[in-house]
Length: 254
Image (cartoon, rainbow, N blue to C red; front, side, top):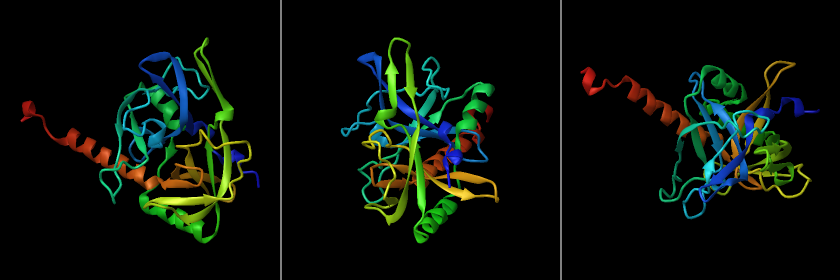
């Protein structure tokens, strides 16, 4: 069965960074994807932490993600802040995931980005889907931007990208908590470099004719991914804190 028509290509974006010392030469670093957590309409951009942060904890550059899927760099998505979390086993070590919060946008641009965003599921549902795929020895899909499918035209200030995908078997739990192993990947066009941060997708039948691509993870290495629930937890905590701030009266109002 050809599953390409079910893959949400427009949800992903090649990560473009600009270093303060050489802002005229943006560069690529992995893949990320837009997501939202209903019923809330805030939009988030999820990727692997190592795509945007060096091993010493310093950021690699300023994130520049084009608003439009065609790669036109003239209008970038504004970000309000970045959410991070540490490992449960070692609070001094950061988990390999970051979530950028998209800043306020005009209604038309927010709607455009919302159409690109993947719908995050409840954490229990994501766990159920992962365990069901493992039990069935089933496959996952991912889509991203390997190094062989992207380039930057510095004269026109335009990134040229072609999303590529592959499927693999979900083999079981990985080396760390919330990590899972994949094997027998179908990618045969060179190195997987550039796929880091790509969404791990489960294709779930909704009706006889409708299939929904559900994000269940974030690709971290060539053979392992992180459960999407780590990112969803970060987003849920952010939403809770934001809602509290909106409901607490200011001193002037008291």
